[in-house]
Image 1 (cartoon, rainbow, N blue to C red):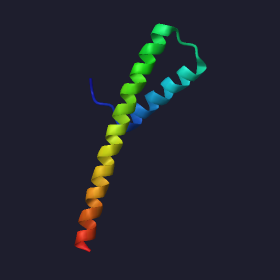
Image 2: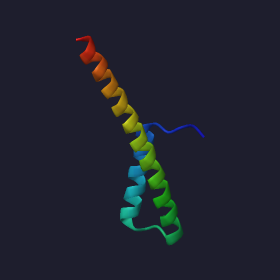
Image 3: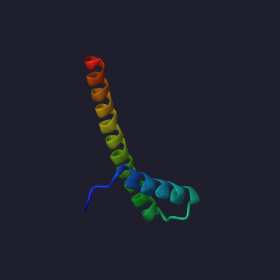
Image 4: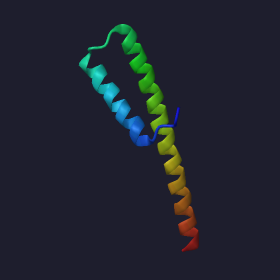
Length: 66
């Protein structure tokens, strides 16, 4: 299975949140949706942390060059 992009993970997570808010899922499905939501949240958080690290590194390089 290919790795999701941030945008794909975010879109699927938003869909799950909407589904959970509607309350139309049974207990078993609710558990699966919640677990998938947790997984997608971790994917999004990891990607944002990676981008943050790159930005900080680029900022340091730019500051030392200037």
